[in-house]
Amino acid sequence: MSPLHYIGQIVREALQMIPMWGVRLLFVGTLVALLIWVLRLPESETTPEGGAKRWDENLKLGASLALILQIIVYSFL
Image (cartoon, rainbow, N blue to C red; front, top):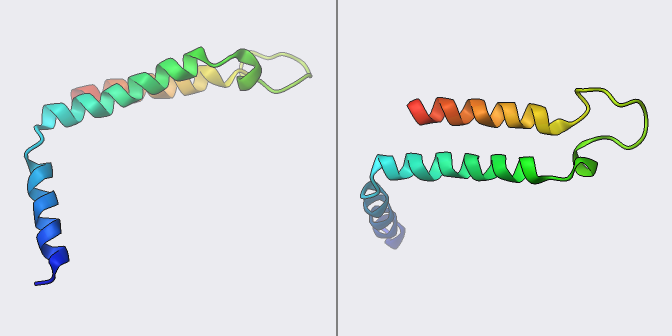
């Protein structure tokens, strides 16, 4: 076996020691952090410049709904 096999085996064993609840916590926590970042974005960065204002022009709404749905799904899987 090459040295890469040994390195791969060490990495594999180290990753298998991480509990699944910890992985889920990190993954869902990343989605929550992303949701907070999206909600804190200024409106000037999430809407097109000029033109008529419509309710669906602000991208925060769609992004927030998608992230909330993902948080719910991955919290219960």
